Amino acid sequence: MDFVGLLSGLKENLMKINWESIYKKDFISFKDCYLTCDGYCCKNFFGSGFKLLNQNAVVLPMLEGEYEYYKNQGGIYNISKEAKREEFSFGDKKLVLYYLSCECRGLCNPHCLRPLICRIYPYFPIVNIQGDILDFYPASLMDLFFGSIKNHQCTLVREYQEELKTQLNESLKELLCYPLFVFIFRLMEIVAKHLQESLQNQCIDSLNEKERAEFLRKLEWNLLSRKAWNNQRFKEKANGIYQEMVAHYGEFL
Image (cartoon, rainbow, N blue to C red; front, side, top):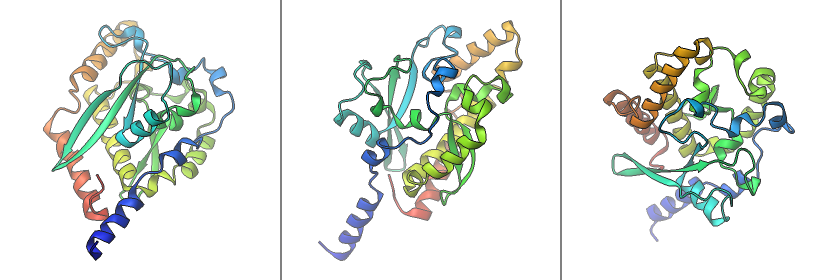
């Protein structure tokens, strides 16, 4: 192997994500918090307002490497539906995501194989290109529409926000060593904010019953049609983030 090939191989190994280490970690630790909220994070809490989407399922996105590790470990036994696969193009590179449809309502078996998105809920980090955490944002698209944390159904958000963020600031350091996670969290920020903008930044906790029903109709349509993201402005932002990442880190996809 020539020197350039050797360096390329070393770089690839350094950027290879250690999913075994990630899956051994509890990113937040609040004993039996589900007992205080009836397992809010594991339910489709707006589901009753949907007409076309599965009213009971929670959709869990996974990176391709995570999904492969998850499957190799046997997966969660009581998730039987085949995951959906989706590709996103960035130049000649592909970002591949898988989506699990989960109806376990917190009773996933084995619990140790719950996806990363479940482990970091209720927040993901807002990061700069260096991977520094600047802030936190709701990890669930459904949580984007609460105007006041007092009305949030998650006890951790309502009552333990500072301790929660302190734990995540420390536990997320392992992920933010990888350029791919810096990229993903930066993409998640624009995914969330474009959905909020598409729904005029409405807050569901300030709506009456009729307004809430109309809001959920629009939310469902946005999720099905991807109206918030199927536009040139969003695509240019996403590609801009990718180009910035490549300029800073080199190719990472």
